[in-house]
Length: 216
Ligand SMILES: C[S@@+](CC[C@H](N)C(=O)[O-])C[C@H]1O[C@@H](n2cnc3c(N)ncnc32)[C@H](O)[C@@H]1O
Image (cartoon, rainbow, N blue to C red; front, side, top):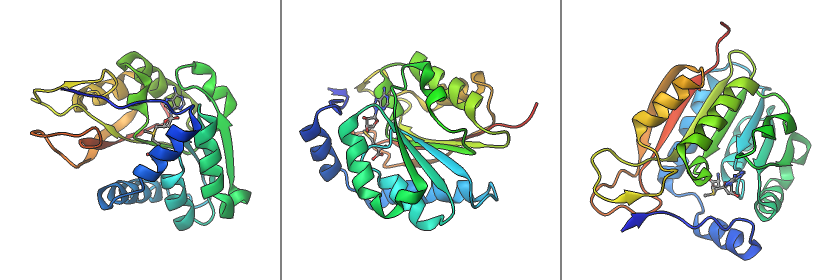
């Protein structure tokens, strides 16, 4: 058995089906709460936040509801997902923007407004391999404002697991190494979610990584 998911997000029916199937569960809301708490440590209630792979906008809705002065930019390469997010976030339209960009093309950083926080959940494993994830980490480090924060809550390949995993699901220590290679500081894996070693599904085993950009 190989742990891998379908990535047909350019297809409208697939994206709608994905959004309906993956409405946030309690563990995922715990991940959103973890991200919220870490953003609050910035002490900047009106900061600009960019979300990579915004999908249907569940995390965005959670954060925009609780941080009343932030501005929020959702990045995704799939128009059906950007449409779903825009619909979900319509009540926040004065504070949200949407940018279509492919994260495997390093030019995505030229398409966004410079943020104080970059967040992402369940998305970077879709970039196929560690090289593409490192490139996103490097560009994230480059585009963040000084003292900014990066929070990535993504699927990992658990240590000592017997199953084969798709190449974008990296081990925890690989993420930590890549974040260091990208020039981040204060790197940590702050929490793991839905750990399942014996009978893992494609939506088990994710972790929240935090990294900061400090002035040299
Ligand atoms: C599994 S969904 C997760 C959606 C959302 N982040 C969540 O947690 O509910 C992955 C999202 O990443 C987007 N994505 C995948 N590969 C991408 C790429 N190369 N560039 C930009 N977005 C991408 C997909 O279109 C999709 O919206």
